[in-house]
Length: 384
Image 1 (cartoon, rainbow, N blue to C red):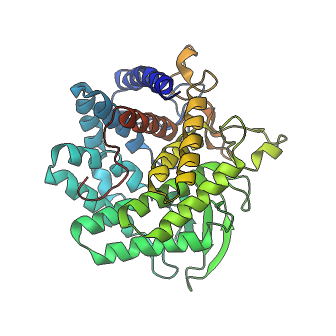
Image 2: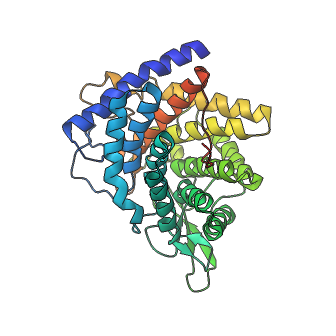
């Protein structure tokens, strides 16, 4: 199957290149977030502007995979447009924006300017730290902690290591431990949000903005946690973080539907009366697939490694099928269909979403690098 799988995944990348190139050609300088009726350019609500690094990041992935300097030039152009956001204090997503753009740019050139952008972005994100409560607050409000931030906190670790800044590292560790202790549940599922008393720092309750309920397991959030704790383990070598990622993975494997693509919430398959019905979320599957490929290399258990890898590839195989890949859908501008942004706001439901595109391409590239006998970078350590 491995040879056939490599052939299948390799056949998808030209389609991905075609779709990304079409956005560049038709809407130069535009950073799409989600499609409406399969079209990227529309007047729909952003909710928050957090996905530019996924669009530019795809260009870096396509350059790394193909060696085509046209993709490098596009990646540099779009990355440069993001540079001012190293000082953006309105979002908690600076890891998404800069680790997917300026980190590959720095690795490719070793230009100190790009490393300094990464360090500044990490310092800016760290300004969200709430000393009473020991967490980085979300863009919503000071009392709010999002599980999404686990995918962004690695830029603080990276900045702290690069700048030899112990305070940054303390902030990053504190946030990870607070997240683990408040919104990662014993069974490995996760809440979307934690609410704190800003006067005392006391944790009050779990909540959600995008999940089915405060008590349910929003699929994308669980994928953020699994992949985020895996990234933090790669940066720190602290086994406590690997343990959390493996707990998340156990829940994912135990609850993934037989067709290997998750519902937007792991409880949503029982809620057919909702306006969205038992809606799948291809983007959550893509995130988890990429994270599980890394986790398979990190775990100490050969048995778990096999399970993580097998599940990741089963999800990728499903996403490459005509049910999800948009290759045969005339006029559809995304790569993956049946993604979900925000059900409650009815934004990007059953559409293409830019993070789904990025992590799908990332996971394909990871597999193909390995198939070609090349090093797969699963760490953000300074020497890689």
